[in-house]
Length: 262
Ligand SMILES: [Zn+2]
View 1 (spheres, rainbow, N blue to C red):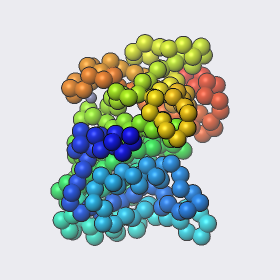
View 2 (tube, rainbow, N blue to C red):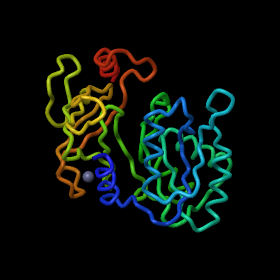
View 3 (cartoon, rainbow, N blue to C red):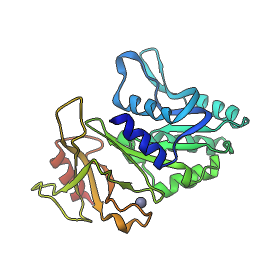
View 4 (tube, helix red, strand yellow):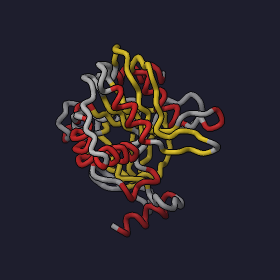
């Protein structure tokens, strides 16, 4: 089921590439005893292309992970002289750090035709560094020559095996096989369109554990599908961020603080 879903999503969003592709992973180099869900998701996204190389920004050295952007930059400089497309896959926070590093070094690249960026995973512990999507996309256009049509974002959760891929207007439309309920942070009552609350994800498509409904610690809004204007009628989910980024408490307590601070 997951494979079928991933294939349909890949076709719909034109993610497949039959050209050999260099993958630059802005995430963790997998190792046997730390094969986290996010590493697996990132690795799975390389499935959309015929991958001939994978370079990881977070290298496992000694017994810890080191962020090695210089290595990534050197590889990107090398690959951008060739014709094969490059796919940059991973966390937006690391993409931001990569763009900053390129700008500080005064490096501008023009990635080969067909290059794409696939984002997933949010800003997590780098919530304080988060910049507006438009600003990040502007930096990417400026330093790598990739326009926003070639930047795709994914949203998902380990316990909710549904892939949400951004539409051309960068919205996460809710797939047919999932439902999203936004809940009041105090009463957990379902909220109508346009209201901020805790994101409750539901799907019957789950074969590894018997869960159909999960409460996340994300705050979000559900918008009526037709207001997007991209042609997809399914409602779309806007994620505002994870509650209690620096110090995750119980979902509702953290959400209350977050809302109170706004
Ligand atoms: Zn849309």
